Amino acid sequence: MDMRRLVSRNFARLRRQKGFTQETFAEAAGVTQQYVSDLERGLRNPTIVTLYHLALALGVSHGDLVMPDEEARREAAKASGSRSSKRRSGKT
Image 1 (spheres, rainbow, N blue to C red):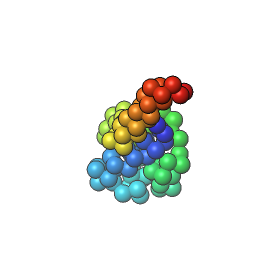
Image 2 (spheres, one colour):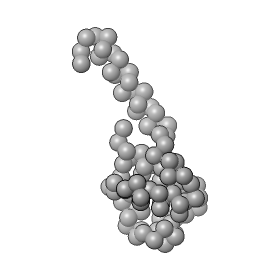
Image 3 (cartoon, helix red, strand yellow):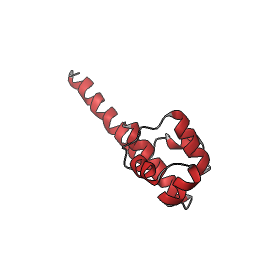
Image 4 (spheres, rainbow, N blue to C red):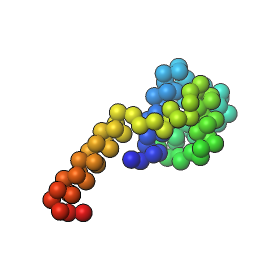
């Protein structure tokens, strides 16, 4: 699972649910709109401290930013199925 993609999807979804535009969120969080844009495109790799501050500004838990979403669960299931079929066939 690509954590940057997961965080970017969760962040964008939560930002929209809370009614923030990229610009209004950036202002509230004390970051630039460019940072928000880069984060949502998976171009930023935020530290745990940054995740905490972003979550505070969103009014959510920092865990919500890294919680697997439906797409991540599908990716994990697909990867797990692929590993299982390789084990059954004797391939590694």
